[in-house]
Amino acid sequence: MSDPRLQTLLDAAPGLRLKTDPADLEHYGRDWTRRWTPAPLAIALPATVEDVQAVVQWANAHRVALVPSGGRTGLSGGAVAANGELVLSLERMNQAIDFNAVDRTLTVQAGMPLEAVHNAAREQGLVYPVDFASRGSCAIGGTIATNAGGIRVIRYGNTREWIAGLKVVTGAGDVLELNRALIKNSSGYDLRHLFIGSEGTLGVVVEATVRLTDPPPPTNVMLLALPSFEVLMQVFAAFRERLQLEAFEFFTDCALQHVLAHGAQKPFDEVHPYYVVTEFAIGDEAKEAAAMAAFEACMEQGWVSDGVISQSDAQAAQLWRLREGITEALARYVPYKNDVSVRISAMPAFLAETQALLGEAYPQFEVVWFGHIGDGNLHINVLKPDGMENADFVTQCEQVTTLLAASLKRHQGSISAEHGIGLVKKGYLESTRSADEIAVMRGIKRVLDPHGLMNPGKLFDT
Ligand code: 2HG
Ligand code: ZN
Image (cartoon, rainbow, N blue to C red):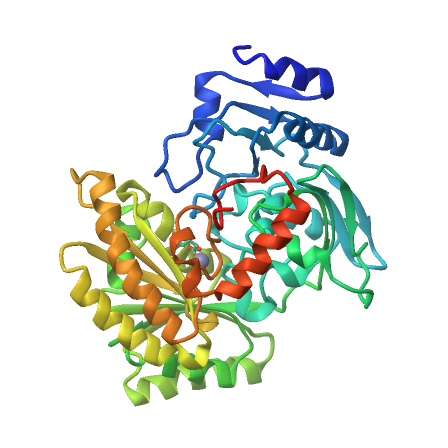
């Protein structure tokens, strides 16, 4: 063990596993952003809450920075360890602890993958409805730390809505039980909500009690081809008015071409500029008629030029792949990612302005648009041309982000809808949060993390 402090760490927490191999430092020190060179001190893998507490107390005694780590599927650099931090990986704490049928809650360790949470809920005849493409790799704790959204927010809301209770180890090394799965608890500040979306800057989520719900009704998936961008919100309104939407997702033909090149099946013979994947409840004739009525109304208006409706689960999965496969299909370009949101009512004006802005600002790059348009959340991925230096590319993209952030401020939107601020969007936090708000956030951090050791440099600089 190269660093002598690590032996004292093992003395403090004998159950801990420590990794210091270069390959491990590299693996655990980065997330899906791939922008920073990992350089952690070591990787600590606790097995219990007591281990986590011992690590945090040790870190305070030795003033070592900690980076809490789940599946590292984040896209904002929130789990990057590039400055000699100790990575605190929750990977070994991945079990379900308790199911309560009366409360309809599931208590899990924070390192449990989201998909395993889905499966554990399903075994009880219920569902945990937060869902997105990285479900197999991300950890529930990471989804809590970023208040992750995903493809079903339109129907079920964000992660925040489903967290009934949390057990955390604060940056000061205290274990707190937050809310204990109470539905009603009007007893002062709800500290649970402070930890949701805190990006590991206040402490470590070690256990979560999540709410479960009834399985959704049977659904159908429809893929729509749109002739122009301007009709997008009209199509959304026509479908939302008539159907109970489970998802309403949009992508451009450019996004589709990348997914097709990655092995997906072509949905239409003709090329259309824009597409929507929507999923909605069916189950009786009236609902099926409503789906057809929505489609026909859009066709009549000229807002939709083609469509296909799933006839089987396999076909539904095929249609979903066209949307869910985008991030993976683009990964090789190391995209510069924007994840922005505005209120749905502000979406048409914001979209028009952003389209004009990016058309002018990015003529030299391929820009891929997609996202959860029904939640007012847009993903804009700018692709790095082959052979271009990453640093040059990021510098050019950041100039445009400054303009985008100004536009978001005008439309009262957010520079991070669901990916978090991390390192990637730290410079733009002021476009979304006022100086007074940021000052309050800093004050809260000082209370829970007095030595500034929890994920330093993420979200804001202290
Ligand atoms: C999605 O909606 C994810 O697929 C990833 O939030 C978005 O890759 C992205 O930019
Ligand atoms: Zn998304």
